[in-house]
Image (cartoon, rainbow, N blue to C red; front, side, top):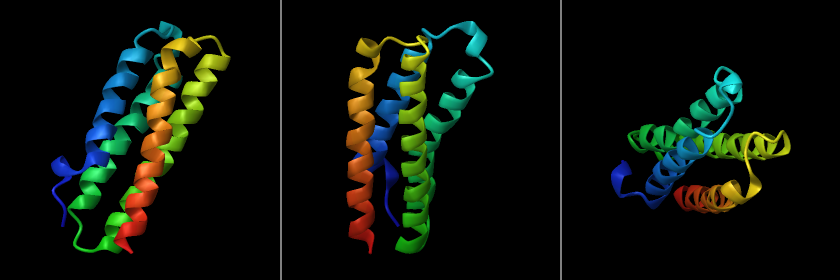
Length: 116
């Protein structure tokens, strides 16, 4: 069992969640029930699944929850890029967020390998 509050991947997941919420505040209100809702759900899923997985009794179970968190990060990256393509977000305002997402994808993948 791991203390999720001490995990760097959880801390970075929380930071990405906060940054994402700040970015999507600039999106059109017409997307409140569309992309904004979808982005909100998947970004919150990242640190939530890391935390939930850390409570599991085996590394295999923890690894499963890390896979879910990783999937949510790829979903988030796709949705942010789509918002830029649709003109809902400005690329310059999302570049650091996208870099942080990609970096966390790599860190979670590496951490998963250490559990085996």
